[in-house]
Length: 68
Image 1: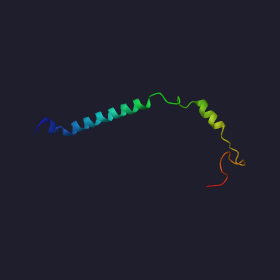
Image 2: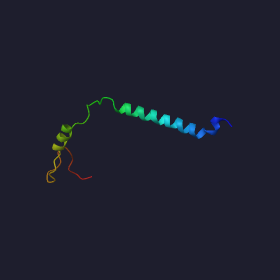
Image 3: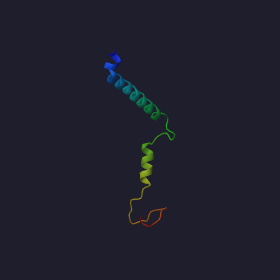
Image 4: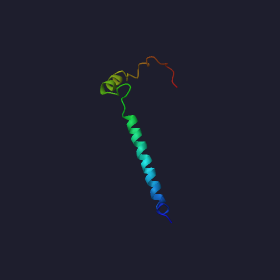
C-alpha cells in the first residue's frame, strides 16, 4: 500500500478543514464590509422605542381595528 492509501482519511479531513476555513474566511470578509445604512446605533433604537405607544386603550394608528 502507498502512503496515500494508508492515510486517506487524514488527507480527506485536512482537505475538508481547509475548505471550511476558506468558507468561514469568505463569509467573515463579506460580513465585515461597509453597511449600506451605516449600521444600527443606540440613537436609532431609542427613537424607534419612543415611537411605540403602550397605551392599550387607544386604537392603533394607521392600522385596521379588526383583530386577526
